[in-house]
Length: 153
Ligand code: NI
Image (cartoon, rainbow, N blue to C red; front, top):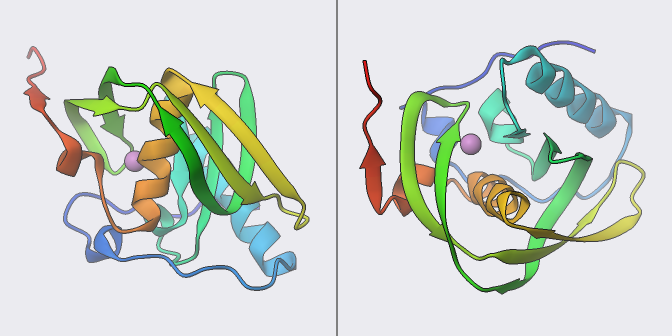
């Protein structure tokens, strides 16, 4: 396992769409393990999408709200309700915004062994799913801001 370099702010890779993973092999499992190690090396990160470590593949790892997930080709298959959220992102340190997200989100993905998983998250987890899956499409949370939160100095 290895810690990979996080990409920040104006790095163009954060604006690129990641490609679907066709074969889940040891290389993919290695990237997922590295992403998780990189996540655990951060102060309070909840999740990382692959392009945040410079890899243009549809991979996400999450360690948040009692979930530890390695997701391959995740997609949202159902979303309902609405909630106001406060969001930050490892790639944009010290920036926080308010967003409106669905209250409940169901995703479908493959795990690191190619097995299909379907997970429903509510509240914070629904926010997390939306935020991470948008990364894979080259979108970031700032695009969804309804209000910028100024941090007290
Ligand atoms: Ni993020």
